Length: 228
Image 1 (cartoon, rainbow, N blue to C red):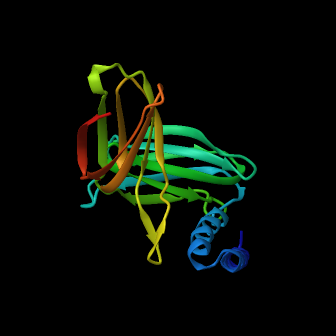
Image 2 (image 1 turned 135 degrees about the horizontal axis):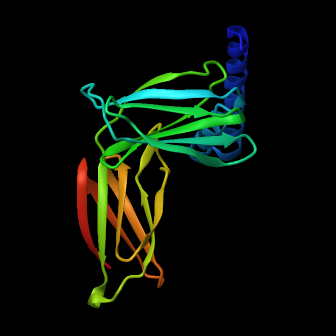
Image 3 (image 1 turned 90 degrees about the horizontal axis):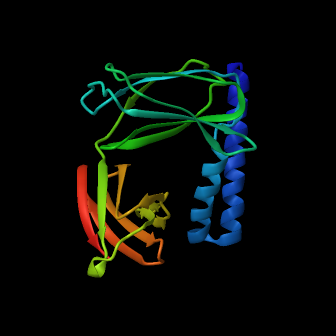
């Protein structure tokens, strides 16, 4: 793709984003319109393109520039007419390096790096302009949350589903955050890669029991025993 063609594509995308935002604001008013515009523009910003395939590589470091070995790296393919699919899971080497060969497709690639005690980095990538990017990623210390649920009376817990969410803001207005969700067996579960701060944890057990807590999470491993 030539630089001129790339600039024309970007100009068209900017115009499309502006048009979507103005239509939503006109239909729904300022508060709700801003929220829906944010979600709509986020969707149109995905770098879907005719991807040539190539190699996604990079180095993962901490805030002081030291390489991070053993960090989980997940590469997804996301076809234009489909959904995200895990293509490869690997870990950084002793030098903090990772390297993944990806196939051609009509869509984009997604890269997730981190987890555990590092905040999860997520990005959508297009290789249409550069089939061999070499990324330099810096991870922030995150929270690894370990929860043990204690049901009143010592009753057994067969498992269930958890939901973690945190407040966000756009132009001073509350915005919904992405929800970190998962299933668990028994009374325990662990979720890493969380941004330190205030989170809301909700659980729904297999027997229908529901509960919710507001948590202030610091960086590192946080172990909690929560009564139901």
